Length: 229
Image 1 (cartoon, rainbow, N blue to C red):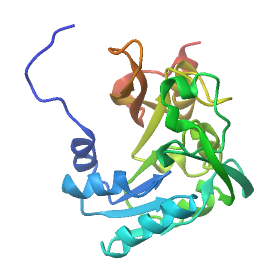
Image 2 (cartoon, rainbow, N blue to C red):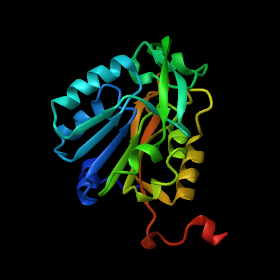
Image 3 (tube, rainbow, N blue to C red):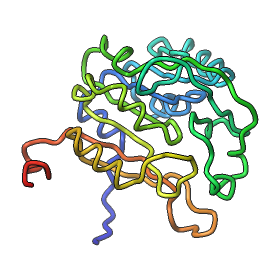
């Protein structure tokens, strides 16, 4: 692999190239992702979705001061209903899934502090009214597949999908990295960009997970694996 000095293309390059009008931010926590988009120059609509009570209060205050940033207080899943949110000592680790045995070895702050009863809705319910090119970002601590399952009717409209995918499994029942790639391929999406997120506490040069940006498969990519079987 050649390591050159040319600047690596990033998420903002993708957003500008695809003329993204709306970013749907699922698992927004206190709005860190939305804030990073604004700092990078994105001025389009942001729809942030967050189930945590305290986190949503902070998020909603940031959004109110923005003018083009909306918020929804719920989780997303495969179907509408209710669920129990495990709230960790550090809220970025909040999840609807239980922690694995490896979780606190990765970061002690993943330990559950308390739980909250939350509402769950689906992507199909919430995103259907949106128009224009849309980027979907999902960071739900192991619950990404369930969120996608609730958006089967609208996923084909997405110009891009950004997922946080695990290498080290810190939640019970979360999917394998290769299973996630196949799932996205079956939906008609291929990887466009990948960035490491966090590094192993023991193997310090190896990532724990990756932010994977997917784009719709196009004619220039050739036939899909299913078409060549």
